Length: 186
Image (cartoon, rainbow, N blue to C red; front, side, top):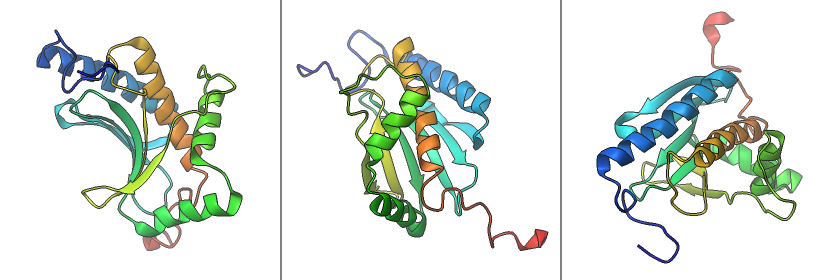
């Protein structure tokens, strides 16, 4: 364990079973909050307490908001999609407006009542293509691994998941719906 307090795996003195219980508490609380918000197409827990997946309700092609827990105990919120064009449509909006994703997510967190100071830059946002070839935007729930059952961590994770949805739903083709994809209703 380094000076930052981050560890690999469950926190010291914490068994793997206790870590799984803590992860389940985080996932369950965030799933309830996501379902209650009514802004996702579906909400489901991932196997083995790895996280939560929420379908984007109106995207032009499949996309999912996720809360994931890495083996080191660090939690992340992300938006993932296989469609390169959907990712590029988000990027194009950002280039056109000159907005920074971290600023947009920060603004949404503030709107959700998160305690963010004036000088706080908000969460960092990484953008990359992962090993499953999914285009990914992601932010850490906390700057380093933290107890997953801590009420402040649970609240931050739920707020960040909802902030991601509010932010990205207005970018690119994330609100593209089924335009041209549902010929059965034509």
